[in-house]
Length: 227
Image (cartoon, rainbow, N blue to C red; front, side, top):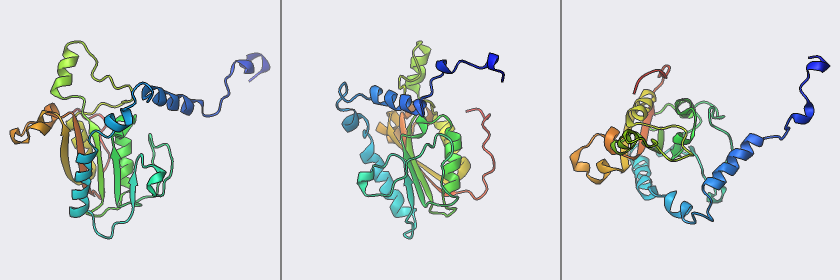
């Protein structure tokens, strides 16, 4: 590039990792504990007891007793566990077949490419019958929110969510990579009235899953498939 066509250097903002800083500040401002002091104690762990029981049942029934390795998102170092910090918005930088279990609770809805993330989870899991992927997400296409959209309102007011799941999309994605998938409704009419056997796609707002037995050769996920 000639000197005449070179962009003026004084107009460039050369701040390393500025994008990471802005995203971090956005999260801090969105969940400002000065404005919402109960955010982390009430809103965040709203379904933790229910999910904990699901994990206990999974550990007792599906995971082999020899399983020792696991990966969890958002684990604090204070828990006494070995932790590695990384950006996994697309790739997860672990070797193939490294873990017996992976846990992602309230994570996939914050990622721009959840289909890639689930594929990466499948890759790093050991291909054993007891290997498991457990997690939870909010569902945004239940009957109540569909009615909101029909009235001209937004599908979801949660600014930190970049992907909006329907139950059908989540179910097809998990079953593409795993032979055994079980669900536990966390909130919604189907959770309050389990005997009615209501369809999860319309009557569940938050859901947890336990997916086991990763498929040996699942093939390629069809991103154009309609849900």
